Length: 301
Image (tube, rainbow, N blue to C red; front, side, top):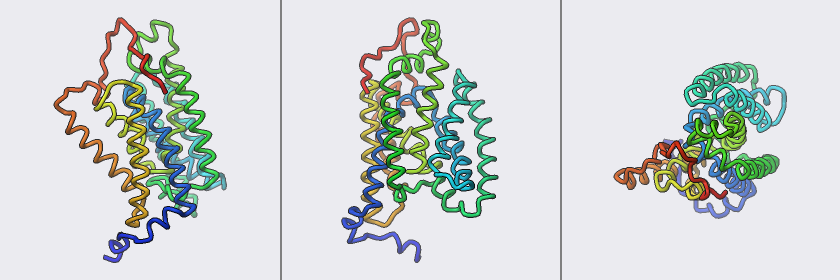
């Protein structure tokens, strides 16, 4: 009962929202939601949700290894996530091959993470943060890193959005027309790795879907227009982060719970409202004429 008593309305929640750690949490959460909104649409239509989940776990030994050598956790996460993304992208061009490559790399990385965690006697808090996120502990240095990652991601997505969309929906046709499908896949996995590095520090490895996959899946259930999906998915992520932080201040909750709960409830409601519409994009099953490239003129990031 004493634990449950800690979860209660806090009359000073406005003062809590004005603290420095809350300001950092809002800025960091906003950057992660923006980055996740940019990449989430492609994760869903490429059926790479498993890869996103796997990259979060692949980053786990990077975080624990960074603790062992005294390096920043964000650096360790980034190195392992990017390396994992490069390996998955290079080894698996087709969905089935990507899943096999992803699963194999995931198993090795997880075992390595367990080893590092057992060696690092002061990694308990780090392990907890990587698994469940710790948005309230985002530092000013991490904010700078998040901002750089978000700008890099924005430039990269804007540069390859149209060919990436074509290669994601009809890879065989795209390859026949001379598009570098494998290179685009590798570039996408690196971009996804950057987003995962950020998102893990907000909602954790186990709850990663809440920002990277679920908002985009919810948006795709509403519309199939790429630009609209990106906008709606980003708005859902931003709304969940902001509302979740306010709820955490009001009721003394860990931010990850209200953030994930808001996204989950929104997804359920959207599925219920759109289920009878037969929206083909709801599960990522976007169908196009394989004799013609998909219409990408509506995609504006």
